[in-house]
Amino acid sequence: MSATTPVSEQAGRPGAPTGLARLVAIDRDEFADQHWGTQPLLSRAGELPAPFADLLSNDAVDELLSRRGLRTPFVRVAKGGRTMAERDFTRPGGTGAMVADQVSDTDLTRLFADGHTIVLQGLHRTWGPLTDFVHDLADDLGHPVQANAYITPPQSTGFSAHYDVHDVFVMQVSGEKTWRIHEPVLRDPLRTEPWGERSDAVGRQAEGEPYLEATLQPGDCLYLPRGWLHSATALGGVSNHITLGVHTWQGGHVLDAVVAEARMLIADDPELRASLDLGVDVADAATYGEEIEAARDALGAAMGRVDPARVAARVAAQRRGTARPSPTNPVRTTEQLGQMRAAPDRWRLRLREHLDARLLDGVLLSRAGRLRIAEEHEDAITRLLRSGALAVDDVGAEVAARLVTAGVAVLEPA
Image (cartoon, rainbow, N blue to C red; front, side, top):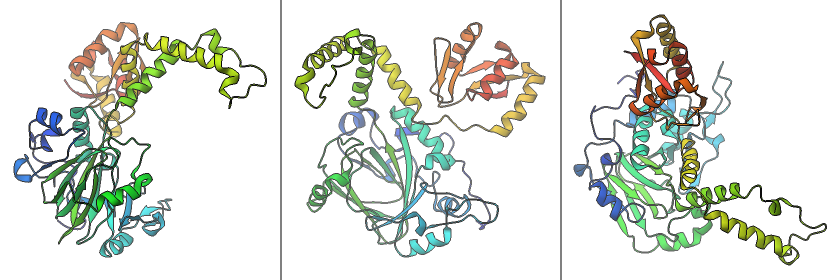
């Protein structure tokens, strides 16, 4: 491949397995029962459907670092557990760019040769094949997913033993890396409980006998639940591995939604709305004990009246904010809109993928935003949500154009 030839962002192997089936070598039910959230799992390349180079090859890494104008925090650099300052690997973009902190391929070349690991963050936003794969995996798992990549030079360790506050799938793309896995010092850590707050305990645990030590080769995949300690060292060649971070929904999310709904039920309680006494000392519970007791009683009573459907709607609203819908094409779409208005009967609407949409009380809620739907069009929109497609003539050209420009649907020939 010549130096000026862009790397394709189209993943290969049409029809290849997607989602969880590409990452684990055991049955989905067995994975859910024996490993999900509890135990690591190592799946070897020979047991999996296909290797991972179509998702992020070394050539793709070079293109991202040298030709895509990335800025931090999409890239960071580390060595021996220390993260480099951004100024050590960014420079101005040059004439016309008006960007002072683009990633410098010159500096990265020097640092990489010196043993530093390059971390590509948020690849589900910057590299097409991983955008598509992460969307599919998140739908499959039911939990939000992100993608990072760790590019490590030979015989180097990018990060010392640590744990993550999310589950991870480690996909070895190229090179080899030896992983040392130790049992958690804290089970199921929350995002508010990072490993740095327990660095001494992590260090002591990492000195003991590992739960698992394995060398990952191209095509291997390692699953680690959140909290499991891990460190890795590249061996005799450049190591490229993708880490898929799974930000699991937890009981705490449900609890927050239940409490929020209960709080809404008692928002108009006159006793709870009244002012506390003049001169109250809020640091002394005894001075307003009656109010505390009243609040506890009201909240407890409201808990029993919380509607599970409203709890689910509240968590669903959070879910919509965890990802974007599939990419759309502003220029091509505008061209298609003109063609569609000229001949509506030749076009149909297709629901934008990964939209996470629902129609509620005349409002279409989705990852593209909120869109008010006229009552006479609700039946047609419901059909669009259920079947994924709708003839433009079913809603008319102007309503179709509104759905397309709002990012809800895309146009395709009928």
